[in-house]
Image (cartoon, rainbow, N blue to C red; front, side):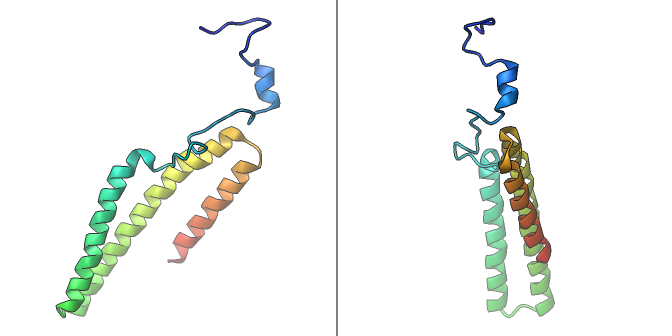
Length: 124
């Protein structure tokens, strides 16, 4: 039950406006990352990609035609890129959003971090 009026332990709206990040604890502070809710699906997806890479090793070992191997390399690369984009989206929704809630310099740091990750992905 929330009480109102003087003597209440509930912060007023002016208190919140003065110190937006004071006392805010987010999932990120608790060590919960953006991919947490999708963790099992991500692991399943990564195991599938791992299987594709093992398939590439087997293809080379069995002297499979070069173009067939390159086709599999392309499929594996696309699978990793797709995984990376999903992870990036979850990072933006979770980690960057948490930083925005806290305010201050943290949002700038998280946006810069995400921008650098995007730049690395574009270089490949």
